[in-house]
Image 1 (cartoon, rainbow, N blue to C red):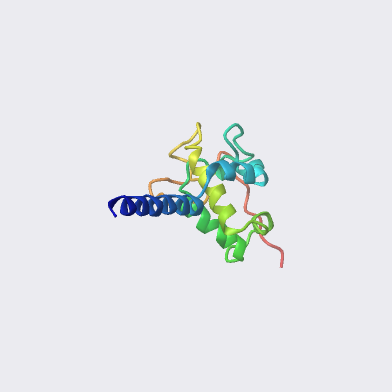
Image 2 (cartoon, rainbow, N blue to C red):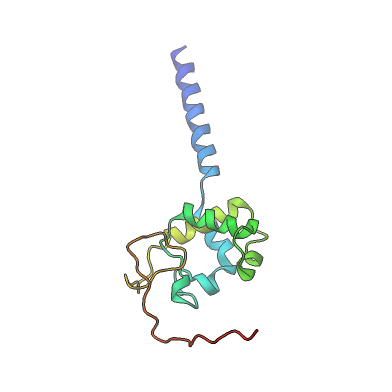
Length: 138
C-alpha cells in the first residue's frame, strides 16, 4: 500500500511538472518566432533599428499584455497591429519570454525612456535634434 501511494504521488508530481512546463512561456521557441520582431526590436546579436524600441530585459508579462492590446486593436499602430495579427497568445508569451531572457541592452541610459517602460525613474531625454513645430494648414 505504501509503495502504491509513493507511485501515485510520483505520477501526480510528474503530471504537475509536465503540465506546468507546457503552460509556461519558452524563450527558445520565442526566439524562433521572433523573426518578424527582430528588425525593429533587436535580438541577442542585433540591437534593432531604433534604440528606443529595444525590448531586451523587459518584463515578459508586461510585454505580453501590451502585445495582446496591439493584437486586439486596443492600441492602434498599423505596423504592430499587422505584425502580431497572426500570433496566438502562447506565441506572444514565448516571444515576450525570449526578450526578457536577453537582459538589458548594453548601451542603456537613465536619460532615455524606452517606449512602453513603466519605470517611473526613467526620464525622457532631450532630443539631440528637434523638429520644428509646423502649423497645420486648415
